[in-house]
Length: 252
Image (cartoon, rainbow, N blue to C red; front, side, top):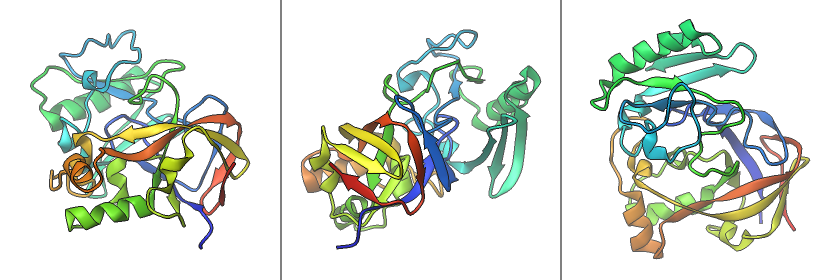
């Protein structure tokens, strides 16, 4: 059998927006992938105070489950400058330094014009030490390519692994092998991870990441074909280290 390996790494600097592919990343104990979900977009009906943002359930922010138009935007984010570039069809449509109020306002103006959100004004927010992930705990998500491929037996259509917005995409494994790892430790590169739980999927996975269309019903396909709505696992970083594309994965 082919050795289990790390095929791809993605971070999602802005909750709800596209992922950014990485060649490598340095993981810290108890942390997310660096800059993953560092920012979120607050809508006008949100209970999250944009002047003092905190972790909130995903419905308090723009998200693919309700705001599929977000999938039309690509991004680039630069750690050093905190510059966020938004793209459509590969062309820049907005850019702002998120470390500066004027940069935030440039992004806000574009998002309000692009989304035309009926819930009120949109604002991009960040808070020290906060990751706007779906769970209040700081976790990393793993997706098994073979499990995604197995879902295609039910959908009878291609399923892009990016629908699941995972941080680490794994190859060389049997389908659904990851569900046997709950409570066990993994090593990827020089980092150690503990598997916490399976990930239950919502309607966000129905959105095609390439087109922004709701063209499949992934939760229904999972329930129909497998009698659960789960795909992927959450892990906690318990030993800091560097991970890189192509690294092997071992299970303790």
